[in-house]
Amino acid sequence: MRHMVDNMGSEKYTIDSLKVKKYGIVRNLNYLKENLIICFKSLSEYKLNLFNSIFEQLIFYFILIIFGKVLISNFGDLIGWSFIDYLLFLIIVDLSTTFTGIFVWDASVQKAIKTGSLNNFLFRPINRIIGFQFHHLNYSGLVDSIMNFIFLFIIVFYYGIVLSNILFGILIFILICFHTIAIDFFIRSLSFISFGLAQTCLDLLLLGSYDISKKFPFGFFEKMKFRFIVFIFSQFFIGSLLIPILLNKEIWNFWLQIYLLVGMFVVFFVCGVLLWRYGLKNYQAFG
Image (tube, helix red, strand yellow):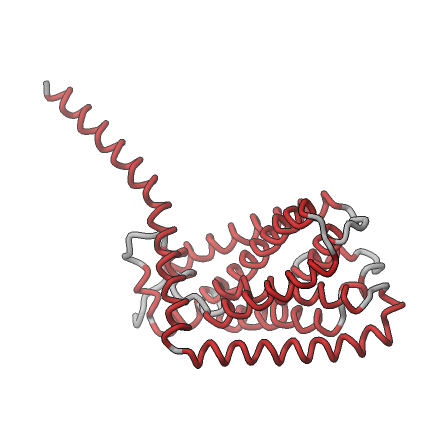
């Protein structure tokens, strides 16, 4: 009889464990939903945040159009792009930057370690990484993304891009965003071993690549030998993969680019998780 009770207890424990695992996903999704609601409320309650973000993005569009006119009028024949091609590229680049920025701009591992606020995520009933990454969603990235999406919709309507290309482009855009978030996650996780190394990589690889893409559209590098060496930058895939899909143009080594996108996501994400595991083993706030 005791053996039967033990077996029943063991079975019940196993079923409960499965339920915890099953509902853990729902719990994390609810956590993300609640933080999105908070992000929206920060805009509705503090309207100056909303107006300031809109104003900054409008200034960005103004500079983008002026600079684009000058660039294309002088180098349009060299890169084989029209002014609208340039706008399409840069709006997608900025959309990928601002959309991923919603989740990563305020996720400073370095700051959390220095202030000891990382403790807040160690005992919550959600995944520690998810809890930290989605705790402070950036409202500026949210506003910029919405405005970029509207601007992009206007350009897509101007091109008359077919629905199948749009849907395929959305799938590739999602892959590019995952790729970008994974790299950002890995770089910020370097703070567990070196603050300076993490900040240097962040400045050079992320912020630097975004600035370069505004000054030198992908067309400048299209015929560069061994151009795949810049696959670490999302701008590479936007110019070499996403734009040709939307415009129904020839794509350079399609499957190679897909493998690079997925492969880099897996590699950087796994390395980031390993850094978190290493860091949390040695982490002690104010210790």
